[in-house]
Length: 524
Image 1 (tube, rainbow, N blue to C red):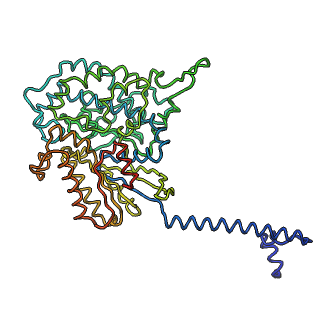
Image 2 (image 1 turned 120 degrees about the vertical axis):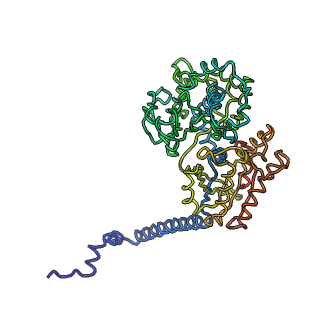
């Protein structure tokens, strides 16, 4: 049997670190003093680092990051609110992204124009005459089914001149759906729309390269025709109007994981210089395949269509208010179709691109003592089929910004045309304030889109026709906004799981940068 090692010998073999730390043999007194002094300094530095780590950990416990949820139904203004946070607290990044929104703004404009063409076409009038009028708001209601409907004499010319917008719309969708292509402005192969032409209104199809599925962009197809076909009625930019045809609204959506902005960034759109003999830069305006050239060539017919009095009258007869939708740029046609158009901050705030999934953004925001506090802000999908994703974020959230678009009292949900949008907001608001998981969460309520509410009331739309309980009270902005303010406030007072929580209400138009910035800076 082997003899066990003596304790001293065992340590020397099994503990090399201890051996390395032993004083060197034949160490002089001066060397020993220097060694001890160095060890003492090393220990002092190490203790200092440990103390800093303990202090940071303590500070995190006493001042954790702030988590904010932005909630509300689809098209309530959630994404615009998040953009306002970005504009205020990540200004450089926001400005760097502006050029990437050019394609989205083009798509918003094209869709608005094509929506008008569909609405005033003789075919839509014939289809309307054959259908049972629903009576729902911002649609082809009983008031629009008039015997002496205004006819658009120049409609054939408009349709012919604006025909290139159909292909441009398809191109813009492909550009957004395939953001990693080396040449994003080149015309991609034409999608095989028949691949999903037989889908139904409850099916979402993702369109990628060559018309085959890809994970980026979602388009609910029509019941009766393939998307973007001549017979398909495009949605209003606000997405809340009911079509006179039986086709469903079509809305492009991009998943939050899609890096679509990269393909349209400034670096990919500008090359400099054109030659060694000039300082002139080469940009997208020099690329003949860039979408701006189609838009620029169609600018005059688009302007003529939008300014045509007979078109305006026909839209009024059909009670279609295109200007209410987000992504509304019809009053800016000349500026946006210019070859060297560069989006402004306000353009980006107005641009509409539906994002699916939960979008998270991190900011460092100074508190009252000018200390930078980390904030995480989550924008979660507001469509009914996305609201199940809200609950996992309730557990450790500090505050909720809830948006209710009070201008939508005469509109219906895209996903369920039987449900009034304001009624849906009220029920959603009630479920949030009564949720026990959110009992200790501060809530800020944005009664949003007051600018559209003012315009709607001024145009003669009466709230009592859609909400009979409003009765015969004055149909002006002051009385109507006060009614909504009190209605939503009383729901919180009646159903809240914690009536003592911090709770504030603001009448807002979140596209108004100055007003929204004031609310955010004052801690809402």
